[in-house]
Length: 137
Image: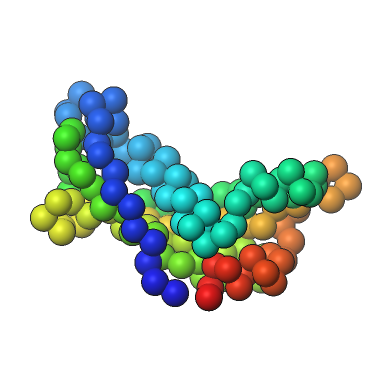
């Protein structure tokens, strides 16, 4: 499966006093990018939650992000989201943020679980086959 790409316009409010993107925004953009990638592949978390009251989405259990070059106000950053790498009850999603000249601003990875409430407790469960197929087709 190919990368999912999207463009992000860096707004004034995304920046810190040094006038570069404030680091937590990359984490927020990773989350948004994952959701948009899922939607583009037909996986609608809101719809799944309406259909199954015990489904809790794909909670984030680990995240890392390395910063290579500053992204600045007014730039358009390209966000590349890699297809999920599926494990037993968890999966990894890679992210890259490219500056307008194609150089790397930041790169990171999320580890997520397929979450379901079981006996009142959030549990990692196997991703349904249809969802896994949508992510990996």
